[in-house]
Image 1: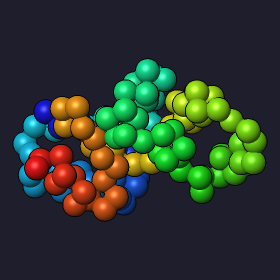
Image 2: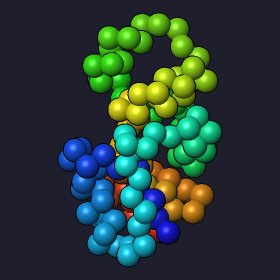
Image 3: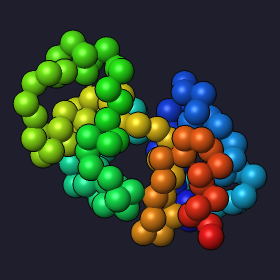
Length: 114
């Protein structure tokens, strides 16, 4: 089973899903904007990605610029902010077993199958 944390309105996310459909038949699509992640789920993803919350943050989103940019925020606080505002999470994220990638570009997904 391969999971994709997907935003259907995002071109890169749609590209990632199409790439996955070409290499795997068993895909779980998680629309994380409709079903936000819990802090524990986000921490688990970050561990699989080998990333910090800051690396997964979409810093160009209006909500970030308007409410949080320039403030001192801890990693735990950032995880809370990202779970409350899932648009701030980089996408798409593809998970296979205990590994994950941010599929930008889509062909980085192949790393999960090697």
